[in-house]
Amino acid sequence: MVQSENKKPNKNTLSDLEILALDSHPKIYGDYNDAEIFWKGYKKVAVINTNQKSHYEDKLLLVATSDKKIISDITINFSYSDEIKHELTVDKILKVVCEYIPYEILEKYYTFSKSFHETYKEGKKYEAYHYVMSLNKEGKAANVSGDYLLYDKFAFKIIHRNDDDWIAEINRSAYKGKHEKSRDGYEVEDWKVDLSKYK
Image (cartoon, rainbow, N blue to C red; front, side):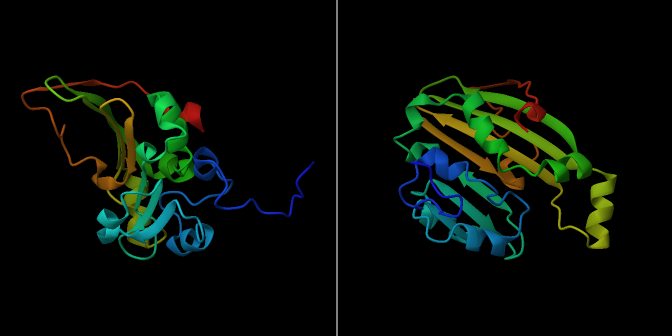
């Protein structure tokens, strides 16, 4: 039976991957009010202020704002999902993360800075993949003119702990200006990744 084009899917019977990949979902730097409307009624999604994040760690998707205007923070908690967490690879997660990236903004207003992979060598399994971009001259000018509210950094990190514990964070504080864990016990190496292939 063919589903009517006008009939919307049941928000709470969709699979976790279907929720994450819904057509026209809001992206980072998108309008926060649009996100509130779009995700209303999805039990696995929370649209919140960034200072509320710790109260919603059991959600599949957190969409947050720091100023109630733009989406400044997106967290995808793959560990929440028994449906998909056992099948994950970095490549599969990148495909989902890139669904939340506004390429038209990044390609115009940001310049690639670095990407790296860090691994904890002792004890519990921990690794993280970092990707960082910095605001370019055009981006700084757009900020000054008021055309856009753009942060000085665009960054995301994909964290993998233990075996099936995966989480992706997209926000400027995903990168704090240095290799966060490049001290004793951690190994840091370049991570070669081309985001354009996931567009």
